Length: 106
Image 1 (cartoon, rainbow, N blue to C red):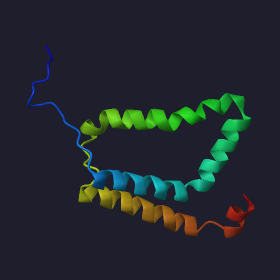
Image 2 (spheres, rainbow, N blue to C red):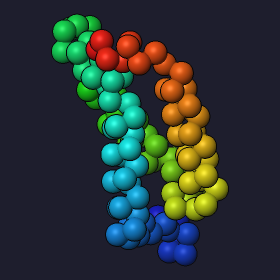
Image 3 (cartoon, rainbow, N blue to C red):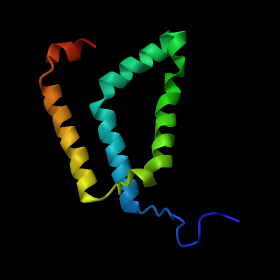
Image 4 (spheres, helix red, strand yellow):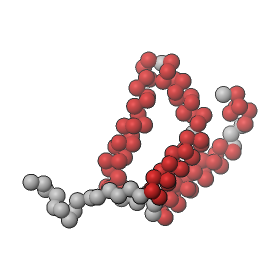
């Protein structure tokens, strides 16, 4: 017997629109954070004490996925998209302040 009734059970429905949104978000984050990710991979490859770094993104995603219902976010809801967009705009403004020669050296 389950303590959760049939009416309270959460059903996850993934639509093509959701998959497209997730794919675009992952691609955008990959482009934005490419330099930082590249540096982390170099450290993970060269330092034995930080070699566990490859597992961190997967563990983080798993923990977020487990708590998504408690977080109460609908990933396609307008308030969530606006919050993410605002954060990306602030990140891009910060990147514009970075000296371009520093980025080209790496």
